Image 1 (cartoon, rainbow, N blue to C red):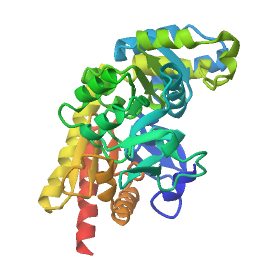
Image 2 (image 1 turned 90 degrees about the vertical axis):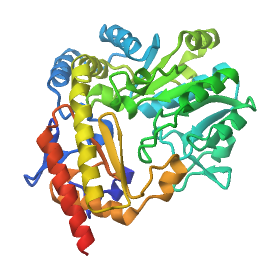
Image 3 (image 1 turned 180 degrees about the vertical axis):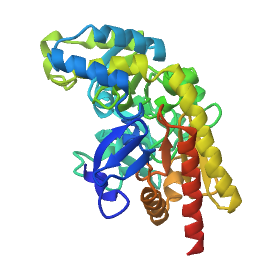
Length: 408
């Protein structure tokens, strides 16, 4: 991947094998994995139920461009978890988000998408935009943008309800695409009342609300949506629900599904820019069913969330012990520390607080002591197989890294 050049150290670690919350590299070194494929392996590596389902399905066929019965079970389960009755399949959250944006523009007849500054929704062109002095501009590093994102996108800061109202009131925005909690620029929680106001504004202005749960599924088996009773029009989620096999889904309310159906042209369904030959393939669907049924369960979250709390408490104890101007934040079974005293309230504040050199030091120091953190974040994701001993080991390593840093 292009961005692997940013891994801490001079070269990436080459993995030999992985199981649960640990992996071993080609030199025989064993690591505690708190990155977990940046959520792709949130289930832990090679969960037994998913591996067995994958093996069985491979023997029966991998892709048919036809459905299997597993898809029916998945649809019912996703409705139970997220409250939306209609679902489509994709291979990545990027695709699910791209398809959702296309459909939102089609059924609203509106041009713009609204996202929050420094959001991340995969490699969706419309989302690689940021704010500079109030203007929508290409995000720094944006490669080969087809058009300036100001032609497709409106951007406001997360938690800025006044700015959100001003943009939505124009009646030009087809949809808001949002993580319910920002995660890719650090964990940025919504302020009290934010989601209620967001839902009220979008309904009043005829704007669709798309919630991306790809990372925030760490909150509960039904993501942040179920835990906090959100009511999205469309919901997208990708990598964690396949146990490591590429898959994604995007779901619709009954009202949105009816509007899509009204606009659907059977004659042109294959040229609309939605779907893919491998989307909904039998292997991905089998992996998704097994993962949802047996791995991402209530019992798993009952184990992982308290461990994330233990991780957070351990990091906080070191911050307090050495009076560091840092803070630590948790969301479900995900937690992260940042090199600033107060938690950022939006993406702009989060970017301003970044310290790339310190970030690289902490990552490499942890890696040299057998712990892998998520790159570009100081983030830990807890797998169902993680233990208290694993968490306490991180606290000890974190303390040692801080002591070495302060001794320089």
